[in-house]
Image (cartoon, rainbow, N blue to C red; front, side, top):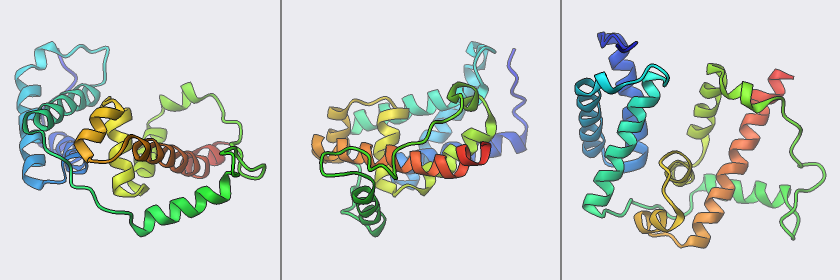
Length: 193
């Protein structure tokens, strides 16, 4: 028994979330449409396998993630990669202000103590804020972060898919984490204090 009713409104909202995620990863509208359609068909036909211990959307996103990975591996397609944008240059400038030459936080920029992150992660408001922060990252930075942290690809596979070097990948992941930390600090943790 699933908690999902497959009504038009809920399914349309879920489809839009899936489509945004797929478009960010694939950068091809037709492929994104195809993988979302395949994902929804798989979720519908395999809904008997859904275990209520998980969130329905999390289960469907896992299907989407695997469908995207299958497509990328099948086509061995390199993601379109854009050279540095103004947003990425801005992140570099901010990075220089936050860290000293040795890579350590400057005293004024060091992270503040956060309240219990485990309990915060369980709140839907936090997840909405995190999603908002991910959308505010430069597109290439968000894509690499999501490939690593959400899709679970290792750095070598990310480099193969995007055509970037391992050093560049680690730099982008570092920028993404710092960008998310700053966004979450100002949009979530400071508001919770």
